[in-house]
Image (cartoon, rainbow over all chains, first blue to last red; front, side):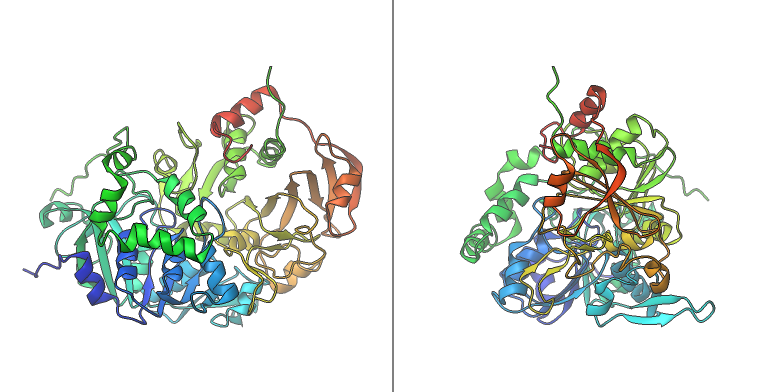
Length: 306
Length: 256
């Protein structure tokens, strides 16, 4: 029997996210964003990370403002509720808190880059972004011709993140996990990564997870660590567990308008509490309870009978 | 007595009319999702909505509040399919999506959109959030409808950065660069509706919203506007249509 990979979030981030690492997060687009892990990355003062993700909602903006990122590979960075991300703008326009290199993608090309990484092939061709300036200003892409038809193609090179961090509904201590709802690029990003950090809402016994192997996201041997962190995707939604806390996105946008405002936000909500349970304590139980589903919609159990 | 439509409600109604029954539509958020819901409940009950996070829906989400993102749990419950971005975008690249909605910070007369950089990309004056799935939809869907607020500084002669290609520099451009989709068909703004001419590929003013005119549209456009010979006022949504839109955006988050 394999050994348990269950560790604290603090130990997991200290071990699997070294300075300078490429880290893929926010893989299910607006849902299941690993905010708890992102805040711990900030508290540990990580530096020079390459952030990879399709849209990331406001998580990347927070990491950029905290000075954790040196490079971003993404299709969109901002705040889905409000549009622009103030820290992303300050870093790219004024170099505050320090300059940020940006490799622009679209959602499809980022998905294909991670898919190529997961398949172990060097690139995947597409017709998307032909004629787009993204293909001209992101020098990672290559223009090519279809060897059969001669038609123009864009080659999207594979991405192999050092670590992909996913937030899932449930996992066992060995790293088998169940994720549901729209997956975005989650499976490709996890399979493409050198190692995966699984943050789970609930820890279940292995037998109960493996009772539905079709729902298991990836083989546990890809998983470096498992963390039990309830509400770890807050304020993004997690299907079956909680809805999106829109007020958090609006408040962050309002308070991060200046760099000083962002520093105050960071002190209050990230550095001050010290850990994720401390942060949840600041929010209070009533605010969290209001996000719980009002109606259960369970699926039918499957029969894997032999 | 129903209050008259806001500019954004007019946009939703105009966008809904672009959706034909049975079409597969790349929906996006905000005004297009309201347009999809309106079309579904009126003339296009068999339209299907596709979402880049990995969803296919028939009926619009069952809501008792506002849908802020396509990944909000009510948009997932009752879906026809919940899958991956690659699978949904794969359908788009196959040519399996009839219509896609997109918007941007800047647009030009050929329907090219900028959602990336104002100024030099290496030293931008404004860094905009980026493409998301917008550039993919612009490149690959059979038909594109652009929906965005109109102002002279945003409706420019030529976009500074072409995030989402429209008709490039005119007729034949999409074919030359190898884009498979049909490109922009319609541009719906807070002031009126433009249609892209089949031959010249240029945005031609088709209608102005109530309270606007050809002259006010011209004043709010940074290129010399061509006007359709049969230009007219944009049809106003019926009371029943307005009630449906307001039911989907009860607090007026997107339409007020």
